[in-house]
Length: 406
Image (cartoon, rainbow, N blue to C red; front, side):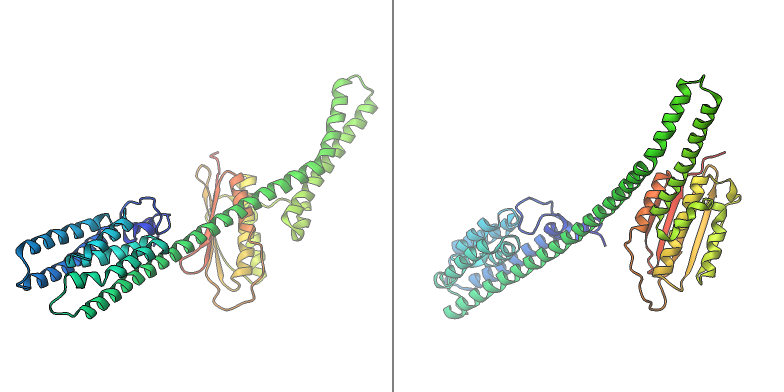
């Protein structure tokens, strides 16, 4: 259940980002209208009971009954603005209730709303005023069926109960809003850390490229410039310059392979002397994982893997390699399904999914930056990558990469 989809079930103070009691006006939800209608009916019911008691007294004049009826109706109707002016309405009803018993129900609703939507200080002041005026109403308009002391004690206890209930509701709403803000802040911080990790990875690549390749490329530029501006140089000198250019280019390639090996990690440092992986070597990766004890179900639906672009095939290989490594660390013993589909013009889709581990195991610590690196790799390749837990408790990774039409 999300707050946006089920906003109509929440109070406006909970459905909107403001804290309960914030003076910023919020649009009423369906729940607010239902609560307002219920509060109006309750106040009207209590007022009708009080009016019935007044009418039952034969000593009461008809004009007094009429005035009480009008005052009770106006008090109940005033409850519709209690969210906008809770303090003023509660004070007015507290003073009115001292001489009009039919306004007691509206006063209780106003006190409850005041305790929900305002902090402790105004609630305490209005509550104290109501308690001070509580003995005045049974003195001026005594109930023939109830004694003065009983009426006073009942009014005081009812006032304290309503105010306490409203303050409890306010405290709970503030707690929920605080927890919601903490969750949003944690999500924002996680996104910030992910962006920082991507930025640091790019900066590391740029520093390595500059530090290692700048010298080699400078030599290439110097000797190539010498050949350009001295086309009539002796053949031996031209041969030496060409040899320096060839050696510098070869060393630059070697340095580049070392950089890639450093970025991959210590365990992959020897890959700089091997051919780069492609989509056609995916079967070898799966076979290697199976020899290591993993259960991998490969579904390669690509008709001719050898025709896939080298960069795209290499990206697919790295995504599958990282996902199999993560499954081996976080779900040992689980069967991993690896599906590759697509073709020229429609792109390549890679899906890796593993269920939750069936047996307890010793967790392997990890930084969690592998998936961030895969997302960055897929984005740089012109595609995208999504990952997250499955409803059954497992984990799934889905990437889509471009494959131009021939």
